[in-house]
Image (cartoon, rainbow, N blue to C red; front, side):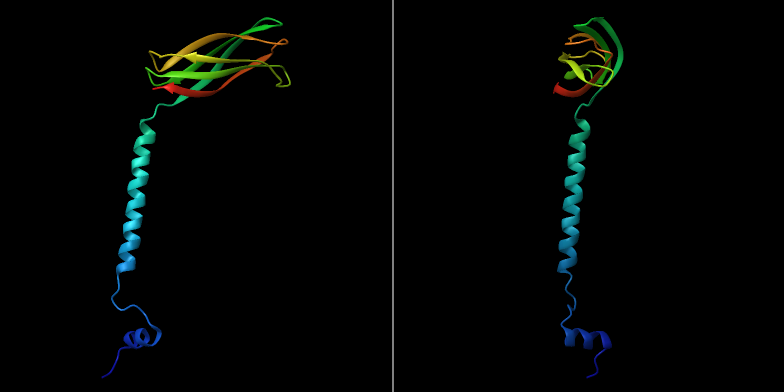
Length: 133
């Protein structure tokens, strides 16, 4: 009986003749990973997000600054942001945690007073996070 070259090589070197289990296992794992990724994306996209943008700084005195900023988030969410008063060389001279909400609109303008240990020349708003959606 004459063997084809492929059959001869398979018998000589131990190849897998019609074994497709490995292909099905890999395909099943890839499909499971894809489904898990899509499920994670669906959950992550439904979570509210928050961003803040500083608008104005009014230096009242050596020990007080008024900071105005916009918060953008999902209506109904309550968020917390950290407001920092800074000097010209970016040294933090005051900090305040501000809780906003529940907000009624996507864009909310907030004004807060920050106590300082010396005259502020700038401010930053950051570290905003959702407290309750």
